[in-house]
Image (cartoon, rainbow, N blue to C red; front, side, top):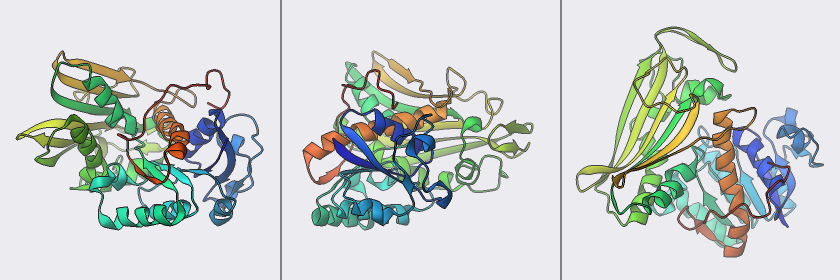
Length: 359
């Protein structure tokens, strides 16, 4: 059994605890929290399992690492604290742990990561003997291994489009929804996530991964961003009111240009209410979906809907992201020290998980 701790108990961390508990080759031995009010609480309670796991959360990350876990699921946010997240991951690597995380965007494609991010990680791997795999929370598999798998069914491929389509009204993360993405804020407010260069910084690595796997040479990566205001005030169950005239929907594309034409596109369409931008693509179930469209011969379209935590599609996306990361741990243990990406780490069948209670 691989001794594993989960660091962070937000949207991804809760799902990660459940995934570790369900994995037949992993043992949950610790949970690290930032909020002192969560310290001492049982991991099963924090994860919403409805049963105790006998693992108490701690706010002392150093103590958790000193216990020598073989693996760390780092689920703490890197959105507004990238330097802190990198420092935490380096600490875990220096402790000799296999680390999986969605929090370091620059390392989705580590070959193109800036030296100030990549070099501390490589140094920590060399010193501690750990390994690192970064995959997205949006979730990563929908922007790398899924489109690549589907592309292999086509005789010819003209373009690859990966879409995330979500209604944020059920997403219980107000700081991200309002301040990072801009929902409910004035239209002259510049959301950090939509600022020039930021979409490419976050999702450009996945465009590069797809291009590398397909043997395509990118000319450049371009961005396209659109925003729409709410026509009327709407109220959400978890985040309160979003006023008329404020941002109600956002759409962006990160476009990988090959031979002068956008050929690899990662697109996000997000709303705070379905009445906003109804002419934009919508998820078939109304709340959330991930879609891959291969234009070629034949044309192939695959849509994936996931739900978790009482049918919440946003939670379903987080759960599948966590499942991808947790499912990689035993492979990474066998692979040995290193810095890995989605083209290295396979997705394997859920062997031994059928009927297990953790998920």
